[in-house]
Image (cartoon, rainbow, N blue to C red; front, side, top):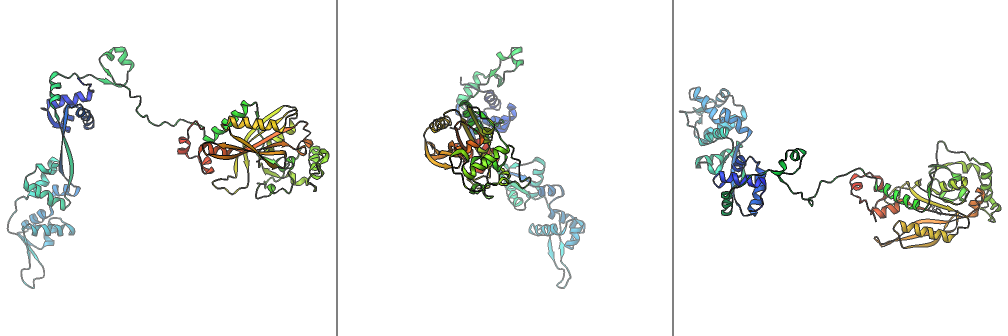
Length: 508
Ligand code: PHE
């Protein structure tokens, strides 16, 4: 005996009770199942060879809203005829219409059909008679169209094929008049096969199938009598969107962990900085192009900040002007105190690490920052005016540029970037300086990630830092775009839920 679900059993039993062959709706009514459940059961019963399906296309006629009102009050031509008879068999059409309470539109329809059906004549009594007269001599029996109308209003929709020929013709006439609708329907009849008969004759037991084992089933012991539905563990479940961190935040967290694993501590600093910490302390001359308005956001209100340690400021001024004790010749210009006081939105997080260094001079120091920076950029698919930088510094006795290369290699390796090379480059505050290039296997492309170098004596001497400092900084968004496969950097800030939800949790 093949395995049968409860609905399949109910369907077979109903078919048997109905004599072995019946329509889906009859089987549904007999079994107590809904039509769709019968159809589903039938699908598997046919594949088991127990039931056969016969399909029959048919046309179903039903009454329209307009037809419904005619069914109540009679077709307009019938109403016109009746009032004409009441008026003695002869009247002006308008008069008869008024009597029948037909409006102008309906009168035209009524008149047309009245004449077409030959129920009355319209004529002028004399050549010069001012109007037409409608005339009839007798009552008319109900037509097929009227019979169909009352049949439909009494019994509801009917199968066209089951009607007499006369009524079938009436369907066509009334359909053209917009009084009835005809729709095609497929009717399915189910029939027990030989195999099906054999099975039902042997007897089918109805066992209840349950999909959930409840405390009640267990407590009463009824679980012994029911059939537990199998779970389909491979069936797709509904998509769930639990709360999750934004992809950019996840990358920030990942980088933060890399730094923490490497023994670094996170530091933060102000978004609004004095030009002193953003530029001057980093030995960037006051006429450096990066300081221009079109590259840097300056604050209008308040426009200047305070420079705390006057001696320190004086030492920075001296370094800029002639190199002070560093052996450098400086930039050879007259340093402007006011320029250094101007407030900017920090353009790099090096402002934050140098500020930290100025206050923490005891080696070893290993700090990092992942934070926002601002540049006066025109926003496009590659550029934002507000973005993030990753920054790190190491200060310790005797550390060298080679240590920096090693640390950078390890830093990249932990981010999943194994192929790294270094190119010489220039920053005003480091010497030597380098640019790290990392190879992205997936993209088959080299990515410029980190700028780095050893802070110059011109930077360290005025801050009274005694030991070498290794520093590097990188943009976060470029790395994030590559990791996330994002072509337009603006997408990172759009809060596009579909994108956020669709981003895989594991990125490399
Ligand atoms: N501040 C540099 C930038 O914005 C990066 C950098 C940091 C370079 C530290 C050298 C040392 O690109």
